[in-house]
Length: 333
Ligand SMILES: [Zn+2]
Ligand SMILES: [Zn+2]
Image 1 (cartoon, protein in one colour):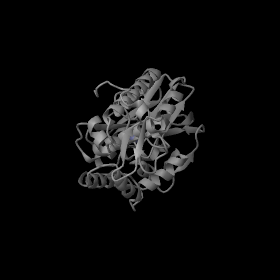
Image 2 (tube, rainbow, N blue to C red; image 1 turned 90 degrees about the horizontal axis):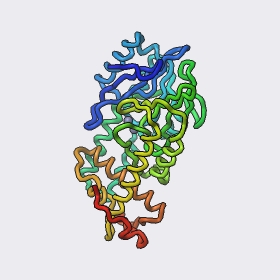
Image 3 (cartoon, protein in one colour; image 1 turned 90 degrees about the vertical axis):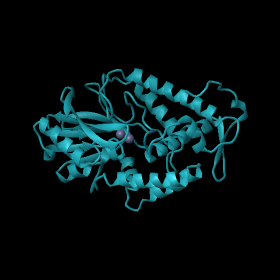
Image 4 (cartoon, helix red, strand yellow; image 1 turned 180 degrees about the horizontal axis):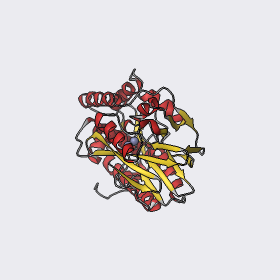
C-alpha cells in the first residue's frame, strides 16, 4: 500500500514481523533527476513484496531507485538497503552511523555478547537474556549485507534526485541517528526521532554515548523551531505540528524521569527491578531489552544531573541521592 503524503513524495507502508510495531514507512521521493528512497524496511518476503508493489504504484521498479538514505542502523530501516544497492542504488547514511551499523550487524555478534553481559550486570535474569540474544541474532538475519555505504556529515546536503535535503544529526534513539530536512518545502523526514503516536526507544548500551537521553532531549529541542510544515515519520502517519509533538515528547520524558526516581525508591535497587516497576507488562525478549535499556538511559541521565548514583556490584544497584529522596511524591502512572 502506498499514498502520496507531500508533493512528489509517496509513502510505502512496509510490514514488520514485530509485535506492537506492524509497519515501517519508506518514503519514495520523485526528483527532477530520478527517484530516491528514505529508509528501506526489514527484509522479509512480505516486506520485499510490499516494497515492489509500492514502487509499481509509482510506475517504477527496484532498479529505478538511484539513492537510498537510511536514517539509522535499526533492522526495520536498513533491512533491504543491500537489495536496492544490488539493483543499482547508492546507499547513504550519516557517516559515524555506518561504523556503528557494521559493528552491530557483524557476524561475530560482539556487540550482542557485550550487551548480554551488560544486561546481566544490571539485574536481567539469565534465561530472559538468552531469549533476548537469540531474538537479536534473528533480527540481524533480516538485514541485507551491504558492500558500500556513502557517508554524509552533519549539516551536509543530501541530493535526492535534484531535491536538496540537509542532514541533521539527531542522537538518542541511536548514537548517530539522522534526519533529512527539505528546507525549501518545509518537509522533515524524521526517521524514528520524532514519531506521532509512540515514543521511540532511548536505550543505554555498553558502547553508547555517555547520556543518550540527554542527547535525545537536546536534539529534540534543536529541531523544535525549524521551519517544518510536514513531518514524515518512519512509524505512524505524517503530521504537521512538529513543535507541538516535540513538546509532548519532552513532557513525556520529564514525567518518566520523575517516575524513575519514584521507582528507584529509598533502597538500593538494580536497574531491572526498577524497569519492572516502570514497565509492568513485558511480552517478549525485545520488550524486556527495550525496557531495561530505556530504564538505564533514564537512570544515567538522572545520574548526570546528580539525582541518583550507581553502586558497583553484581548486580549494579542504584540509589537516589539524599537531596532528591522524597522530592517526587507522585505515584507511578
Ligand atoms: Zn529505530
Ligand atoms: Zn523504526
